[in-house]
Length: 347
Image (cartoon, rainbow, N blue to C red; front, side, top):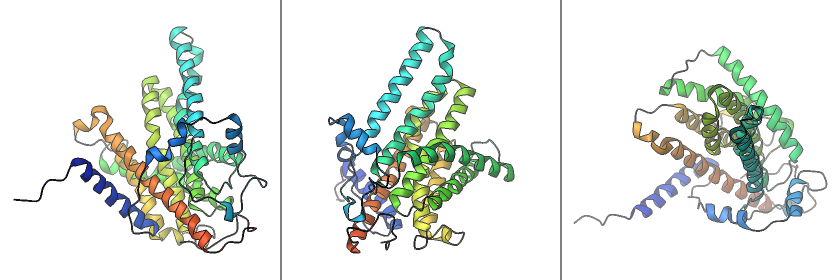
């Protein structure tokens, strides 16, 4: 008799462990990462006051940026993003009511804006919260979100004008589109990370997420204007696992590529850590755009849900790597009075 068949739950857990171990090896640690979404989001359902929210939004100033010795390496438990998401959803719902119940077409521009903004902006607040270094202000994040989002679209359009592409949905067209768009965003992400002199994994993820969220908002608004509210709503919920997450990976890749915290160069982008996470973002983007020859994958958006899940697995591994970086900084013996922006050895 053969070995007894393992339960499906055990097989799934083993597959997840193998996947996180492989991705985690890219960051420099050869072990699986335990993923506990319920633990991470446990504070979403706890009661928080307006003062708690105000305190989070004050992060990143000279007075509120903590010294390295006070940066926490405890598991991140963001919650403010859920309040922002709720406010945006209520606003969008009221605009839908205005449009459908009262036949008010003047609500359409608002629907385009809020429908495009809701999920990417809430995700951006998520990445702002988990930046445990608290060294980037909300004003800087908004600047990167708005200017970086549009600038990344400009960079992408320039690349499209230089590289001939088709609008097909075959794998090669999808791969070329993913390569061009992720490279366009990369150029802007790298510029902001160098300009703001940011050196840590959480910083890179935040700046990447800001550029990606801006890109997602403006792109979805365009699709909504062309194809209507149904497409707008579909792209809105799918934004939970697309541009914002892909660009957060690219932002982390930029930090991995920096040489002793010096600005990114054409030589440092050849580092394996950079190439792996950059091409992971490109691959996820390409697989998203590829029209797979398997019709059943389109049922209940299975294709998209699988890619969303995989993108979040990569993000969870990067979060674990970011917390490990904090522990490495502490082990390096950083004095309590040292400021957060001073360079320290990487893991």
